[in-house]
Amino acid sequence: MQRLNREQMAARVAKDIPEGAYVNLGIGLPTMVANYLPTDKDIFLQSENGLLGMGPAPAKGEEDWELINAGKQAVTLLTGGCFFHHADSFAMMRGGHLDICVLGAFQVSVNGDLANWHTGEPGAIPAVGGAMDLAIGAKQTFVMMELLTKQGQSKLVESCTYPLTGLACVSRVYTDLAVFEVGAAGASVVEMVDGLSLDELQGLAGVPLRAAEGARN
Amino acid sequence: MSSAAAAVADIRDGASVMIGGFGTAGMPDELIDALIARGVGNLTIINNNAGNGETGVAALIKAGRVRKIICSFPRQSDSHHFDARYRAGEIELELVPQGNLAARIQAAGAGLGAIFTPTGYGTLLAEGKETREIDGKQYVLEHPIQADFALIKAHRGDRWGNLTYRKTARNFGPIMAMAAKCTIAQVAQIVPLGGIDPEIVVTPGIFVQRVVEIAPANATASA
Image (cartoon, rainbow over all chains, first blue to last red; front, side, top):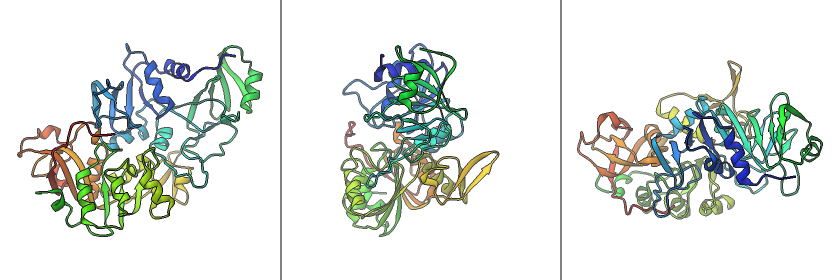
């Protein structure tokens, strides 16, 4: 079985982002999706700190620390991009203007609940940022994560044990082993990596799975 | 105003102070330094973060002047001053989802009594709060956040208080300016009236009480 690496996962997510989409990429792993978006199509990247039409990182030495992304890394602005304040930025999410957001996760439940902001461990200092607004605001919320934890536990679960970010908000989950659809009808498998069977995937994920219509591997 | 010190001279012990900025972008460092120099403490601070590195809100926390912080994203790789005070039980944290923080600040500036927001419904951060179903969707009742003062950083300003901003340093500036009883803006340049095209004024002067010119130290501020 050929597990996808992080670059391949990012490329796989990028394939499902259509021309003309307004997209927010969460900090961490989802940020990598930007590297695989087609440059010949208009796809508008939004950053929660007030920027639409976000471009790639500047050349070393060219950083402007008043032009940053949500991860506080230096970025650039594409020609035609613009700036706005925080209330407008989050109106873009909550108001349903953003087509897609891609987020990382600790856990996703088969009905689309998301847990990605807090482990709930005693002593952990919680930080939520824009995750809750993005998760419930975008028209579609994609999650990008490895299917299993380092200990081998599935992060696709019947019901999240970590504190929730949003209820029934995730529609697709992109992992290193398979792409899933989640929602009211439960989890279905859209595609799997080569050499993996639905039974094997079922065993690893530990939740009821069915093949989506037109599923492939 | 003639100086940052003069601009913050009436901020008292126990005041609530909104501070603009997302990380260090838009952080009014010189106004905060002047506030630290005044020696007042027991402050309630409203900012997106809880300090980055050694400057701005981090310096205020390091100096022990902050009793409570209302923010969305305190814990970061460089939030060590906050982390230490929080773990020592010396600082109270009200954690607010970032969009709710913006909406609550905006609600205060717009004179609204409260807002129903979908963000946070069904999560720990909405526990104990009133909820309501509106047109089949669930919302949480959230109250406005106002403050005695707002310290913000803008790019250009005039003596009427009209402001423009620079790139993503804009962030919370325009809405905090509306939500505080007294808004103090540090700008890179004060221009004569008419020096800002009225079509591009971002914050109208009615929301700004004091403007102080602080020329940027250098173009390459640290991260």
